[in-house]
Length: 155
Image (cartoon, rainbow, N blue to C red; front, side):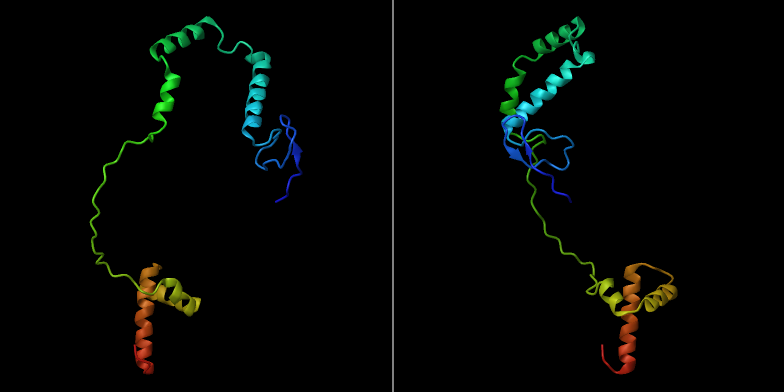
């Protein structure tokens, strides 16, 4: 990844390395510079001819007044509620340890496969009629046990 050259912040004048994911970054990441960036962005948006009278007609003014009457001091409540999470409080549950009686295979297919050539795996899949890993492992283990018994190597 190419490292971008340092730029001068438009607000504070300090040099900074721009974020590669931000196309036209002109401000550094300091909070006061970000605030200035936001204000400049709002000014640019409001200065466009199409946006100058945005939400300024009487319909929107009446709508906002009615909403403010219904929600007095809405801006104060946010700070009081910010301490709690957005989710409901979950009651604690007791943990019951249950024994897992399922038989786990001690040898993973990958361990068996790497010791067998692809031809043997293909042969096992053809003989069993299944390409499922668990069935190939079980069949390979049975074949290995039979082969060790025939060769007198034990189990």
